[in-house]
Image (cartoon, rainbow over all chains, first blue to last red; front, side, top):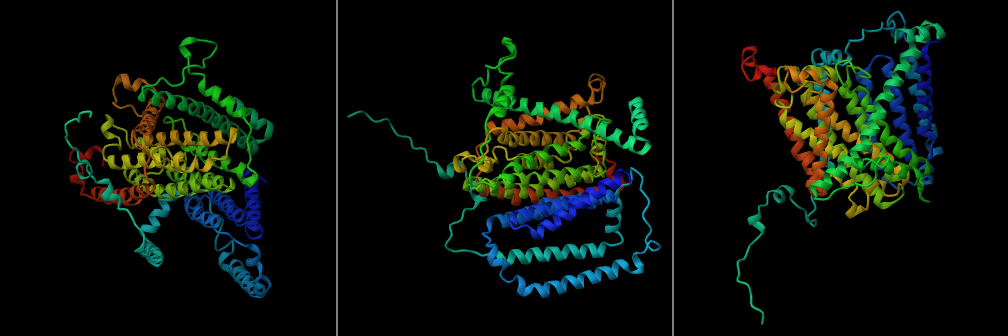
Amino acid sequence: MNFQDIIFYIFSAILVTSALGVITVRNPVYSALLLVLAFVTCAGLWLLLEAEFLAITLVLVYVGAVMVLFLFVVMMLDINLDQLREGFWKWFPFGALVALIMVGEMTMVLMGKYFGLEEMPAPSAQDADYSNTRALGRLIYTEYVYAFELAAVLLLVAMVAAIALTLRHREDKRSTNSSKQVQVKKEDRLRIVAMPSEKKE
Amino acid sequence: MEYIQQQFIQMFGAEWGAMLFSLATNMTFIFAIVIPLLLGVAYLTFAERKIIAYMQIRVGPNRVTFFGIPWLRGWGQPIADAVKAIMKEIVIPTGANKFLFILAPILTIMPALAAWAVIPFSPELVLANINAGLLYILAMTSMGIYGIIIAGWASNSKYAFLGAMRSAAQVVSYELAMGFALVCVLMMSQSLNLGDIVNGQQGDSLLNWYLIPLFPMFLVYLISGVAETNRAPFDVAEGESEIVAGFHVDYSGMAFTVFFLAEYSNMILVAALTSIMFLGGWLPPVDIAPFTLIPGFIWLLLKIAFILFFFLWFRATFPRYRYDQIMRLGWKVFIPITLIWIVLLGLIMQLPESVRKLPPLNIWF
């Protein structure tokens, strides 16, 4: 066992424990934070696989943006755990079935001959100056450009839809227009009156 | 160095010896960065108090001195403040979540220090010369927000929670503008490595720095940096006139000081990044004799100090932004500017070779 293996096992242990914690911890804020920990350790594992671009993007996107908003929502909600737990046993068989099917599918994929060592040999280590980002960029913008653009459009549509669903104009609210406020000149608001000084009675 | 490495290999075997040796050298390097950084933070607070004082026609701290030396009056102030903070009791409110309450300041300072790993101080002097350095910086700075929102939530106080929410919304919004400004930098340098970014600005004089072709991006980055670090005039997260002191209202003693340290080391980090990406990092302003004799490290420090002065100057000059104005500035002003500049830059880079060789374009492209 060398140094890298030890790091791998430490990271995997933290990853599995925190992932278990996400679904077992009672406090939703803790479970969101454990998910953050899971993402960060997962990024560490990806770094061991020399996928530095994906690893850093995972931290940047999921930890830096998605989970912040998640945590935001979870902190503001007043969640009653007993109420959430009520339907647990009723839905348990259904959930178990879905889980079993997923496990089955994953075994079919991973045990199939496509993931055998003959089909996919372990990649050899790259040089120190090999840029993962550059390689990924080349592929995305040449070979997979249509798929990439389609994914981007899909995300844009989803974003526009989400905004359109939540946007509402309220007539009873008095709103301010910042750009008008910023552009106000002194002459618009201020009137200097010249008047002679008054005598004391 | 060679000798010590040999000793390690003899003691622990070839593989383990090399690993432990690199671990030991890295630890030394980390301490060599973090300790001066924390000292810098201490004296940045002193500089801030002094500079703002002189701007407001006051004197500032002028009592505490070392060994009674009269001309050092005031210079002992940051040390005295640190000692005071260590001695004070850390009060944990009754309704607070104890674990998260203590974790929050740690989560704030961790990314503020970790981001320094990829900062190049001179061509050779960098802890981790990774080829995705810029992305790493973005990832680390985006993690700083956790400490603030956890602090606000764990304090179990309305003011703290309001401050945390304001801060989170502000940081997430300005991160976009900041990221787009950096996209322009990496379009110019065609590399994510910070060392390569500085090398891309090499030339005869400061005309080659990215400051000039990317001037609007420089402004966007600097202002977003001020907003990201929750400094005045964007300090609504603290807003002492509205929400007392925001997310750290319930913190005291060393726990509060850690937030303070994180804020100031983030300031120094933003200043360092601005100097590396727009002001040519360790490069001298003019590439002739008296300037090139000064080591690059000193130039970088001077540039950082120059940008930091702006931070303090802003604080002494501008009144606090209103919250909706902050959001407007981030989303409706900065993001469109950065997007336009990215398109413009892309168009210039796609111009035919003969046009790009004409002055002044030949300096940068």
